[in-house]
Amino acid sequence: MTSTKKVRSPLTRNSTLSKSQGFTLVELAIVILIVSALLLLGIRNSPASRFWRQEAALRELSETFRFLFHQAIADQSFYRIEFDLEKGSYTIGVIRPEPDSDERFQDIAEGAGNISLELNAFLNPSLGVTHTFIPPPDFPSLGEERILPAGIVIEKIYVPSGWVSREEGQKVHVHFSPRGFAEFAVLHIRENGEREITLVNNPFTGLTKVQSGFRDYEWTYGKKES
Image 1: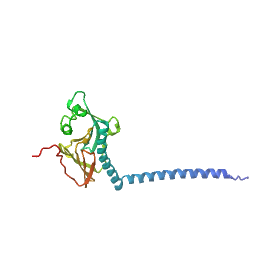
Image 2: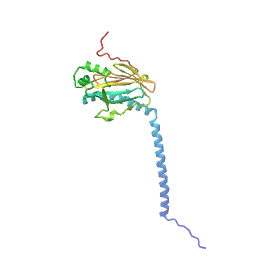
Image 3: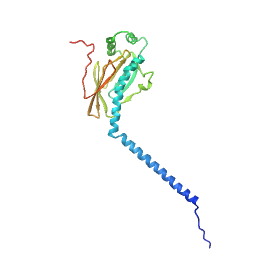
Image 4: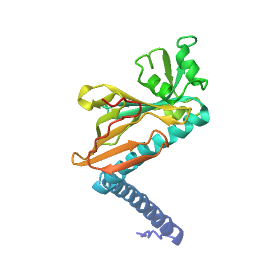
């Protein structure tokens, strides 16, 4: 009886070893991918990550006021930032008058009138009723709604017509004029339910200031002393 002995060539052994190593590398890659995803998720939800997202949102909001102040001049258009306090978001747009709907507004847009007249026009209830609020033609992406990150809440906003709180469920508008000024606005912002922040804008320079704590301001320009 003749016995048969299988002889495995070096080529066969190398092929088997390569397959074994190949599967090991694939499995290792999967493990690395899973671990990386878990680490990324953990970092994203970490207190430090939330803090920097909130700080970035506050900085973006502050810079938006300054940007709109100068962009209104550059475009010679009336810009508006609209806050939805209940939803915790804001939207940017341009105000365009309806054809022949408001001669007063059209005269202002053409440069007629003084600062007092235009500020009074801002406070006129008809503003926004006979005019269209559209995304900025030159920057359509600015018209997209921006939602504040979790932990950032605008408690109330002051405009020349008075304070509006989040509980009232109203939208608040701040306007920017092509003549080089904006509505005075004060935002009371609460961060993570504890930290109190006040953001206030300068209507004549476009600069904004962020302060610790809730600060109360009142617009007195053009008001008669009693």
